[in-house]
Amino acid sequence: GPPNSESPMAATAGRVAARIAELGLKLPACATPQANYIPFTKTGNLVFVSGQVPMLDGQVTGKGRVGDNVTVEEAQGYARLCALGLIAQAQQACGGDLDKIVRVVKLGAFVCCTNDFTQQPEVVNGASDVLVQVFGDAGRHARFAVGTNALPRGVSVEIDGVFEIAE
Image (cartoon, rainbow, N blue to C red; front, side):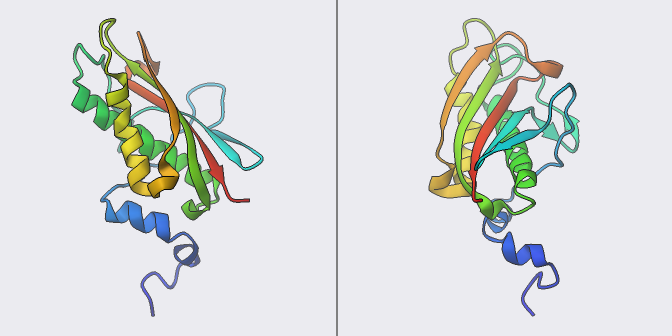
């Protein structure tokens, strides 16, 4: 039979999952909230995903301050990890089927940086690029990218997102 024919999810969740695999990306396990909030909320056909920090093999990574001990290129990599976390949470909100994501609506991005650092948009492109690679035109989104003096757990990047999903 066809590959993965034993998995009913493979038939329904194929297109986006296949694209993620084709890009050589791996979605992390969904992070457990570290405070009094939930990973995402759904209202109507929108999913609001809480801020994601860079996670690698289940551990928080990407600590530091951009413009001090983290380079723009490193921070872009951490933003990519945040985007993968957003996709993983959105997948959970869709019951495992990434093909239910109609579009990425908006990102809100915070970059921990020095006072004179002004390349927040370039850092956050790391996340935006992943979303466009994975979802194509549906991955194009509105966003903000701002600098801040500190982020939770000492990370250099935190990003939240809003996704539109099919009912």
